[in-house]
Length: 601
Ligand code: ADP
Image 1 (cartoon, rainbow, N blue to C red):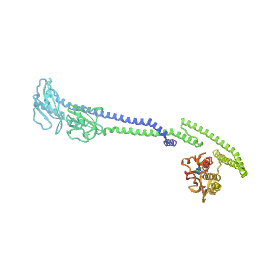
Image 2: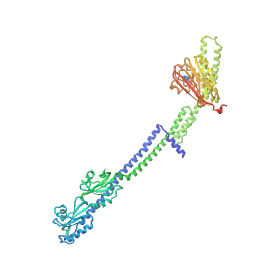
Image 3: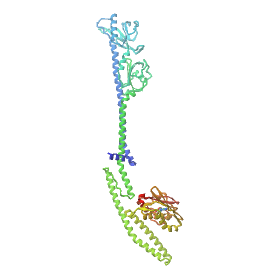
Image 4: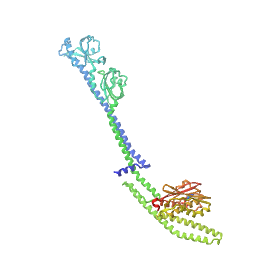
């Protein structure tokens, strides 16, 4: 478990160009489809929901339309009386009153009801409120239409007791002959029950409007109670509705700000036969509430999947890229000549095979390097003996023949001596490096005093310095001992002070100073020589590197000294660095660890 977690953490911490590319590929192939699918799901949900809302509203309106029709047709049917006898031409007044009483009792929506004779005069009348006189209706449409055998429904009109509608129907005998007319005032408050019974979500409501767009009855669910007979024509929707446009179904669904204040999804239909329009309004907030949960779930699930995919992509990209990075850093180690770190890749795929091949290559290179070192070591070692002999004999010849030879021969011999010195140095340096690389450079650290070696080296090099009028400055201080190999430390100092003298062209000064910094003693070798350009400073400690400079071409050197110095210092657990400015001089500094108290004695 911990292992998996660690693997995951490592994979997440990988960065780089390839990583970015793999990530982009993953994103394109997985994250984008997820976003697209999530988006598609939301759009489909929305569309389905719009259709659902429209269907619910339309069904409700159809149902209510039927109920309203039943209400009005029922009332009309009650008026369509038929006398059982064939020859009857009129109904007797007493009988009329009896029938009117019956009708009023049967239908509470009848507010007032009257018999009208065929000449247009009311013959009897009964109502729930105080009655007006019998009137002459002969010119009124309700009478004329009923007398002509049709059922009549008037436009809605408003009275103090509520919205009303007038209906009229013919009364016939059994021979189907019209013998009278019945008219009634129908109280539309009876429709409130129908409207109130409807359920439209939590906050949806219904209302009826008349032929002029005035509010007739409304549902109690409407939280903003409107005023009786309110004029709704200021709403575009109402206007379109009373002009006969139907708003049923998803295509005709309307979204608008309702007369009652809220943004609603509206549907409606105008029943021109009855002069009434049925409207359903569902506040958007409530209608959409149902899908809000599903929508949120889709969003949350998509987000979770997205985050997981992202993490997984990061992990996978890391898994792919991290072995490549391992190979890269290993290749860098090889380039730096370090062959001790085989790559460890366990991806169980081609990259693991590549890792194995890489390790084989590394072993091959290591073997080659060893062979080369061995060769250089043997060669240098074998060359050293004759070179030492040449150098010794030439020195002897030069010393012994001083003053005895002619000038030209002396000069030639002098050149041979210089060349043999140079050859001797080169062979010694090569041998030193070969030893070091073959692991034969022996370094034994012991608590070592640091001022004595400096003094000894300065004394040794004084002749060289004097020749060039370079003063050697050193003020020894009481310092603790360091852990170092005394002979190697002297070698380092000879090299650094030698270079300082070598690369100071005219007169100048070489100053050696020492200080304690932390747990180290730092020795600085500062000169007033030609300095080293910044670009060359990094390469200075590399094998065979010499700063390309016209002025130092004549100065003999192999470019191996500083490489050996660094090797020695590092093998003694120290460090070395340089600070320099062209034409002003250089300061080579190295630090060696101070012997801790328990090791001093
Ligand atoms: P070399 O045998 O050439 O002196 P080193 O490894 O000792 O080899 O030095 C490498 C190069 O660094 C030298 O060739 C020289 O260009 C530069 N160098 C070393 N020490 C100094 C110094 N004190 N001032 C200026 N240049 C230096």
